[in-house]
Image (cartoon, rainbow over all chains, first blue to last red):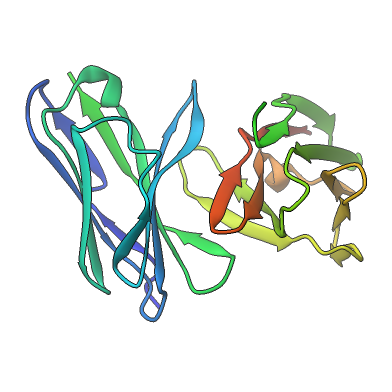
Length: 111
Length: 108
């Protein structure tokens, strides 16, 4: 199995630009999670889906962030407009049971 | 109060030493418990699940103490390759809570 796939691996963008992060979960997994990790705040859960339906988005910092899961094999996290404080590593994870499997992450830098 | 709390360390130990980490959780209804390992600039990876009866995997032993609401991870005979950040994870219902991680450096 290829594991969780994320793209891009690195993204550098200017403040105000739209950023779209992509995730392909492990085939057969019915949960998908988006996390953000910074040195200051650690690993934060942003949103998670079950069977493509958003279950809890209470971790989404503000309306600039949105996430979709149009089908079982693809999800996006969009930031519009991006701000320097959004700079972080964004991880996608998937699971079938309580154990989660993480993708390699997208390192986002907003200048 | 945070759902999950860990001592961030860092823990610097010599090769061959035994080191233990604790992680406390606030919700007595928490159901599942895990330890993850995260190497520098990498994603977290599952190290082991934590069961009420305790479980062991080679040099690693995980324990759960429901009465005091903490989980622990013991690493025996530390290797240089054990250097990483160790994150505890607690699930409550459909919620997953990660600790901020404990940094371990094993010194030659």
